[in-house]
Length: 189
Image (cartoon, rainbow, N blue to C red; front, top):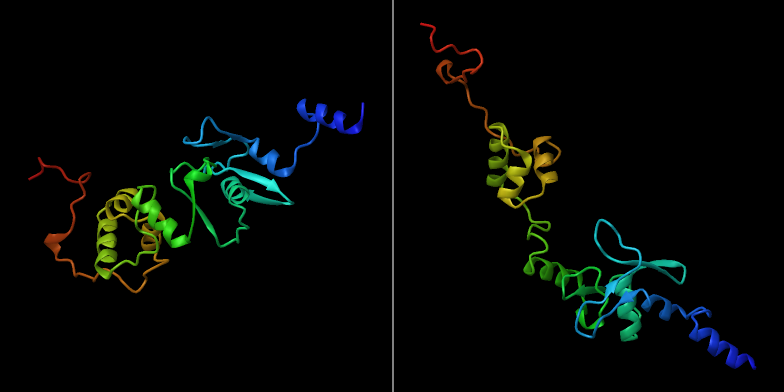
C-alpha cells in the first residue's frame, strides 16, 4: 500500500491532523444553512463570544469564520456584526462587516444595549441625581430611571466626576429641620 492510500485511510479515520481552517470549522455546530451555527469551542464568559487560537494569536471565532468564508483579511479595526444577535453564531450569512458606530447603532436598535454610550449629562440631570441621592434614593434605582450606568451615579455621589455642579446651600430654619422618627414620642405634650 502506497503512502498516498495510507494518508487517505488515515484521513477517513480522523487520524491525520486537519488543516487549520478545517480544525476551526469542526468546532462549529451547523444544522442547516439558515439557522445559527453555534461555536462549540471556548466561550468568553462575560461576553458570550467564542475564542480560538489561530496562527499563534487569539481571535474571536465569528471573525475568523467570516474571514475564512469571505476570503478577506480583516484588520483589527474591522467589526464583524451579528445580525442574529447571537454572540456564539458563526454562520457567515448572519455576519456582516461594518464599523464600530454601525455596530453600536445596531445593538441599540435591537435592544441589546441602552442608548447612553458616551452621552453627556446636562447640569439639570446632575442636580437631579445629587438631590435624589440626598433624599436616599438607591444608586441602581437612579441609574435605571435616568438610563445611566451605576458607575456614573457613584462617580457623581463620590465627587469624582462633575465636581463643579453642586446643589445650592440652603439655610435651615429651625422649623424646617427633620424630626428623627426614633426620638419622636407622639404622646409627649
